[in-house]
Every structure is written in C-alpha cells, then in structure tokens.
Length: 257
Image (spheres, rainbow, N blue to C red):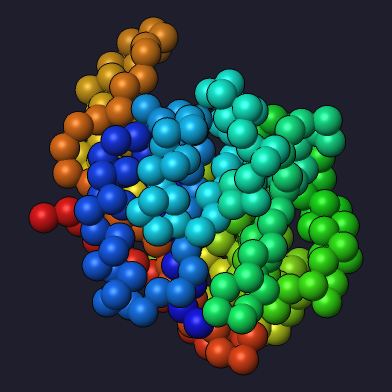
C-alpha cells in the first residue's frame, strides 16, 4: 500500500495544484490512501465546508488540522459528523470534532492521529500522553497508524518520533511550511520526517505575499496577511507499506510548471 502525506495546503494556489495535479500523481505513484493537512486551505488560514469538500473531491481521504483549526467558525458546523476530518487530539476535551480516525481501504484499517505541539505554540494538553491514550484505545483496531504532528520546534517533533518509534507506522511533521530533508526509518521501523513542507505559492514567504512579510520585518508594524499569487510548490512524503510494515519513506517536492 502506498500512502501519500501532503504538507500544509495554503489557499487557492495550493488547492488548485491539488485539483489539477493530484489525479496524475495518484496514477503515477499508485497511491492508495491520501492524508493532507488542510488547516490553511481557506484563504491561507482555517478550513471551510467548501474547501473541505474540494479536497475530498480531488482524492484526499483524511484531512488533518492544526492550531488554526477554528479560524473559520463554520468548521464547527460539520466536523462532528465527518470521519475524514480531524483536529489535534490534545485540544481541550470540550472542543468539537475528534483527534483521530480509523478508515478502511483496500482491506486495511488505517488510523490517522492529529496532535499539536506545545513549544512556541499555545498551551495544549500533553501530546505525548495523548498519543499513549489513543494508542491504547485503538490497540488491535488498526493495521497502519500515521501521526500528523503539527508543531513548531524541531526538538519536540524529533522527541515524539523517537517516543513513538515501533508503535506507529509513521510520524510526519507539519506547521513550519518548510520541507526538511531528514526523512528516515527509525530503528524500530517507524518512518519520520520533521516537516513535510507546504503545498502553496512558491514565490512567497510561507505562503504569504513576500512584500507584506518583508515590510513587517522592516517596520515592525502590524500587517494583514494575504496569500501570495502565482505558481505553487507541492510538498509531501510517500510511504510504502507492505504487510503492515513500513518499507520506505520518500520525500516529494514538485514545482508547478
């Protein structure tokens, strides 16, 4: 089974790349299951019902979120009823939605867990303890377990990767929008990468119009962020799983032509 994990989809440029290019990638790489972080898919922050439906129509199986999960209030109107969109599991327990899901495809039970980091982020619940809690709940209920760790600090991401080594199929980082080149198989068989990267406008600063960000750094004055225009970059990892064990992890980075 080939599983594609797509980094933060940013705004219209990111969605258009997914709409236009994902079907070809599915065929080319014989992809069976797709996970995508969609917390920036609506105008650069949050997710709406229309962008949620757009990503599913393009072929995404599970949408994960992050610290901007509630930036668009309408997500709370449908997230409770959907098994294919999840928010970080270590959000406060009274938040709507779920922090993990298990879907079956091609005879395999695939669990996807979403967690949010705490270093340089808000004061979420302990992601390590939450991971333990979920893994205990889904014991013997999943053949493959993938974790999207939406976090800022490299050290925290690495720590969770090592902490879960041998207990999950893969841990991939999101949030920084910059793809790292440290994909690897950890000693006990878990795949790991610090950050998958961004799927969004290439000539930008983390997806935002570069002139706005530069001006903010120069003047230190507040600015309204706008998603940049132009061609997109696609960042993802491809996981090859055989007999429920990860055989390889491959980094993908494609510039729109």
